[in-house]
Length: 317
Image 1 (cartoon, rainbow, N blue to C red):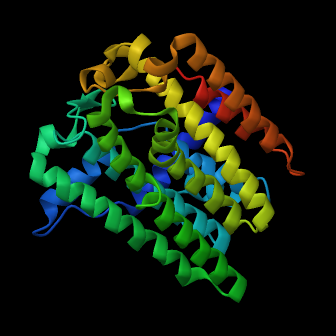
Image 2: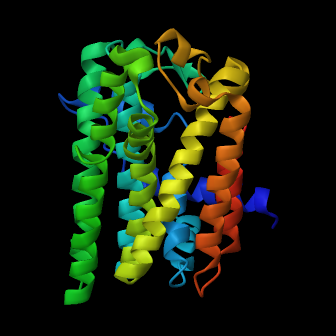
């Protein structure tokens, strides 16, 4: 199949994996679970779990996770099971961050992926609980990977992956980036480029780093290889965010699936407002080129991953 068909097929398989681990909507907690599942099943590119699987494929074969999803069953090996669990967990964390980002106290957005945001449908209080629930449930899911581990090395790889997941999602990662982003809103033109890049690195790139580093860790990558992938993911994340800022200026609600112009509405200083459209596009090009060079440097070439990175960075929505 061609690249477009392959990415569609793998996205469908990732949906199968994620749906396998969603909580059941029952009991006194039914309302919050419904709100959690509403946000997760809204669709999306499933970028992070796909990057995780394809980063693992730089170091070993990962056909099992795709074959298992195709057959509607769980994976047989420690690596396959761990990958699927961490793929689902990371996507839940990503969605928790979106639920909280959309809240009136944050970006105050009413649409996400072409439909009403969680707080608009379920209320602010339930949306806060849904985000909290997704974050906690994500770690509950990821911890299940230990159940399949049989060797000390497998336990170690899962433990390192848990550390990466918690750090990149926490105060030294995504939450730290969101904190700096809130502070920047009050600073206006006083925001420096250093602070802006810190926000992009931690708020956006951190979860992409988590995806690629966890995939590689579970597949047996060395510390030096993990460092290179962390830099690669940094380039991807910064380019992704700058492209997002470009689209916020140049796209439309119909194409993007969410309101455009929200950065200007919320008085946010972005790379685009700081450097302009053309300079921003040049930076996206440079970061993309560096990321692809790093990916192409590994002995086990993954051309699908290289194409995926290019398509994601130069996306139109």
